[in-house]
Length: 138
Length: 306
Image (tube, rainbow over all chains, first blue to last red; front, side):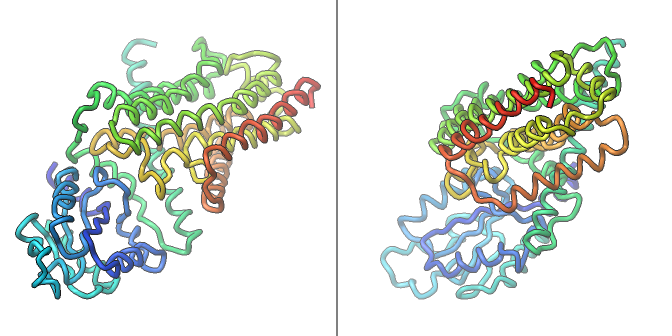
């Protein structure tokens, strides 16, 4: 039973795209990954429109006082087990926004992140490798 | 036929299990053809089964403040209706003179149950996008049902006024398929486009328009409930082309039916991939004015044995 669960999760991770106040570059790269050129449907990865359908959350952007409650809400709405993947350097630490009054710190302090994909923005290849590594961690 | 046989027929073959397995495979054909049209490789053959398994083993969430009973009844309604429908379709095709009385009216009503399930589920979700999706689903249902009923009436007229499903198949075996006449072609076009709308595929995917209202009525569904919605959709994708073959193209009790079936499925997928989405009012106008007129012309032709 556990094996079947793991196999299903690994073979069909549906991703939901959470744009938590990013500068849009990471979002555009994520959309690139879903185009026919990279064709992630080969691995069963599909972009879904509702967090209820999602198995993985692709979060972009630096966490601030406005976006923190929204991100937490989306994380709570996602059925477990789910992966959290931070896309872009902003999610690893607070990037160049460190001294800002509005920034509430890195993601690790608030929700469990499985994999970080650094880069500003990361290349589509990097995002695919990141998702593969997140799946291997399961 | 004892009780055990009946239970076997509804649950294993040709009811739920068989239809679900084949139907999920048909959704793979759909995804693969779509991928090839977009010059991609596409998912592997086990993809729909992996999706289904994963959804079965995930957490099922029920939104706070929604009606639990109605929320979970929505997906089940479509699944049960499709299981009964497939049993009727198979038993009538392989044994048209049997004592099993199945008439076309019952089958048309069974086809109405999945949209009703979607409307119930969407309305019970307590989500504005789901409500919009449910109301669009309702409008869409009224739009395609009118020409669909006229097309079924053409078939009934050509079968000599009999609404028994077995009689329709026997009439086709003696005089040749109804498709090979002007009114038959009209009925086939109307039913094909109604199937497109029943499956909510792209020109008519208004209820769940991904770019406007996310997933429409399905937006709050997760886990097992979503899996049941997906599998009843897959069952419809298997059964509706078979329904078209059996009422217009001479039944499917021969191996030629496999080719006919694949032709219809690929045609549906190609229509899906080469058309933009209509607005809900455009869809209503298309079905009532365009296809409605066409099917009434077909009805008049069928009266005159054309």
